[in-house]
Image (cartoon, rainbow, N blue to C red; front, side):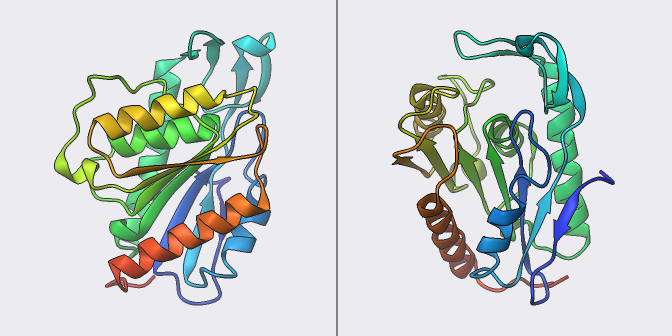
Length: 227
């Protein structure tokens, strides 16, 4: 993905966060967040990919950056599954490139806001077969999860932090909670944190993300092959 934005840390990178933006946004949307997080994660690279521009059915067919087409809003979104799989493969390609460049996959984290969060949840639990450091699911949902989802022990040990606005009227808290609950039912170490906000990001939330990432990286220890 040649239009991917890469933010290098001040120290040699030994960890990475791949962060997907939401519908209608672009790769620069979370650049300020990445810059703020690097103040406490000084050896973590941030990779911010760009979604392709394509027509979105629920927005009258208007073309905009989108990881997949949304065909209907209810009950929990009807989506273009093939486009979701294409986006998941793009994330997998990034993981593999980072791994091949020397970053231990256990120190690679996937993060996504809204539609981007749906892609990283799908990728981490239903597509990617190897280890990861964890998943950050911001104001998002999981259209491909089910109550009968069966996961391997490796996937069950993958830490997930779900963060959601209590006043979100775009992706309702119930949709986010459903993703959390299905992960918990499948045995995943998942946490839920609610914030007094709408479909957005708050400074308090970013601080919590920085603390969570730092704790995970300390727990895993130093990487074997800094890149």
